[in-house]
Image 1 (cartoon, rainbow, N blue to C red):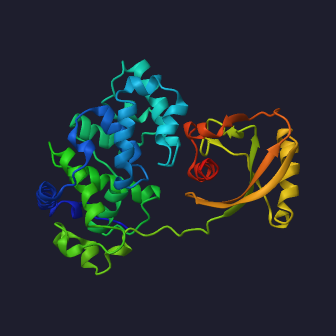
Image 2 (tube, helix red, strand yellow; image 1 turned 90 degrees about the vertical axis):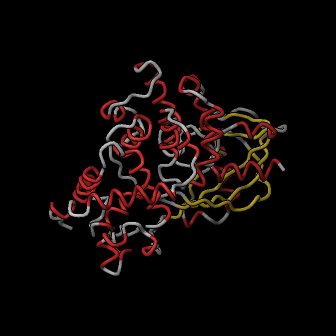
Image 3 (tube, helix red, strand yellow; image 1 turned 180 degrees about the vertical axis):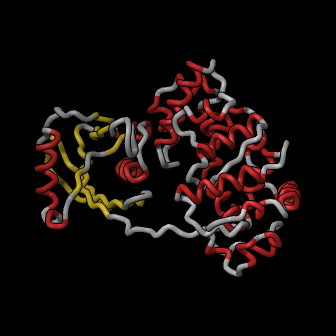
Length: 358
């Protein structure tokens, strides 16, 4: 993994020129590149964390339509923010955006801070996101190291270590910082991102079309895809759970998840994990769980079906049944079926809601 210090510099100027020339002709037409508003750029960078550009674009436009300024976002109810974010996933990003907007409004007079230290003090902003905001919104000399940049730089300089490991990441940061051409951090960083997204892709990189092809040690090796080294994936746990849709007089019962943690603040139908030996006699198990956990006597009716979703670290399958409640007392919220669309939900629970709304 070691890189000699001099390795960065022999072709440094040529790398900068070639990449900037390529970017000028091939850059992607993205909505957040048509503004210098720090707030809009900040929103885009948070949304782009762990999410592809094509998915982000409609959410970005709708989010700014709903919350056009940082003041609008800070004053909004978190539930509304989560509703606008619904379907984009990784909901902690929405909670962090909302929380950070309140901090900016209170401590920075509603203006996104323009220093690395202040940006890193805001929830949801790491070093690469901060560098992107400084570079794109404030035209400051700042480097980035998002997923695309890590891959491009690892291949360009044959850095074989795992970029998620601290030592390798520190090396890649030094490379990224050293390559920034003075006065051109904005287009150079954008170019790194675009090159990784369009040419230097995780699988099947288009090396002959790459402007840095003749400087790339990964390409020269004949196996560019072995850079960076891949993390060994662990087997994804599969969770089974039973889920009632409890009806009474045209309303159904929802629970709200705690404000922090996985899917924090979202609404969902009650559900409980089931182990292997408990998968028989689900109706009886469900009736007992509802009585024990929610204090409700119910009649368990037919199965709606099995609903599945894959998250970043686990898969879940919900066995869903309709139930009829005999009383109202419960610690959940009774919601008229036509109003379910107003409550922010994860994708799997939204599908359940849609199945009973049609």
